[in-house]
Picture (cartoon, rainbow, N blue to C red):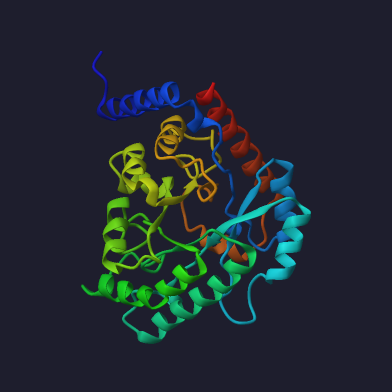
Length: 314
């Protein structure tokens, strides 16, 4: 029986993966770095979040970028000590961009908010040894465009802090998000075009998200290959935005593609972010979490990811 188009693409990636494994077994000695994005944990203390990740052998954490003002957000020394006590390291910072700190806003004051926010997060990132900060070119939750100049305003605004990214050696990871949530930059190709327009060595990386990629990309595996070495972090959730193993996501093809681009290195991370199906997940960021649900999400996701990775590496 003739394969469907996506199956043809899957098979091509599978064959390339098997050939690499046969000819270059050394490229598979190091496994992918498993992290977790904690902003979906809401108002839970960072200590409790770290203990949960430790229980389920998740060695890295992507911290909520919660420095919305000078008096808000995690304190670097406290954070470092607590994470060290739980044997957890920081992978990166999940930058949060709303209409209040929009790089592309048509109100200069709000673009300044975005600049100030990134400066605060960069200062914190250096202190906790984060590898990257996720950057969204336009506000999340604003799918309608302001006008035809938002791309140019966003590029111009990010250039202001591009040198700080370069100096701090923290990667600016541009995230494409589905069209239902943002007005522009929806695909890996869009992100590459944006990075090319910024044209600064301090802005060279991409943060992928498989949930958004299901909407924006023709094939997730191919999009990951196209991102190549620019990809530094990949947010994960199953097809229904729930725990891995609870949906129809082709996780094997994703893992194969990541190994093909050499993603199993010290500066790249696979970061689950299962926020649940439907609706707006962002209110949970400032709400009281359901602890049983969080325990289940981390347990099922970590176990299933490791199981599939081990199966492919046999």
